[in-house]
Length: 295
Image (cartoon, rainbow, N blue to C red):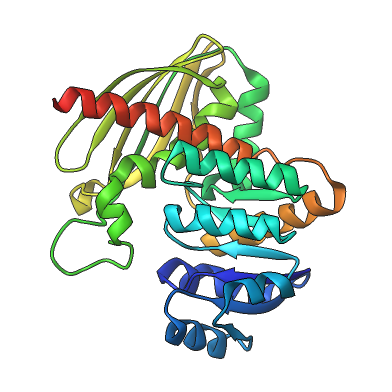
């Protein structure tokens, strides 16, 4: 499968480009970026072609991997689907429900496959654990926390990007927590509460369709010594703890494998654009509650 990369930022440089170049079943055909000089730099490093025209790249490939801010990703994903390209998307799919809905619609109408790279869902040990807990059932409650220090201190962080500064932890790491909670506890029936903590920290209370509830704590501005991610389940089977560790390169390689499998088999992936839309809807509901609480 010929695949192109849309984006030249830190995530594209650190993970996407190396993985696409190394993948045995992919032909890394080209790079497009909003800064042409950055696209030339990335393409030169990985032995592929830089494109100045995104539509020219879309015409030359079978699929695209996207590493762009969510609002930009949504617009280009719609164009890529319209050009017949399968989609390897980043989370969140879009910065608005309307944008995510357009991505899901475009993929469905074009008949292309899509996979959203929720990192934890593609780490082998974590993915196996999630599947086992979903099969076990009987969960009463869960607590998830994703705490980073992207905006802590003055040294600068490669992921201290403008969109993260605007949207905060809810939209950056919130999708990771939801991508684990939803397949285990069921869809979110209602965001029961949302409150702000220090800096960009947010706390959510979720009611799930299966009857369980969960709490979620998210931050990109936690003290460095307090950072980390974790998720604990409690129910009739006892206590379950999400395994930690794993490599982003391995996870993206697996996501690419699953996009290839979905494209060949024609079956929707569990983490497709429709699932990405649902995650976006939950994020937007929480954002609305947070805004109401600030008034």
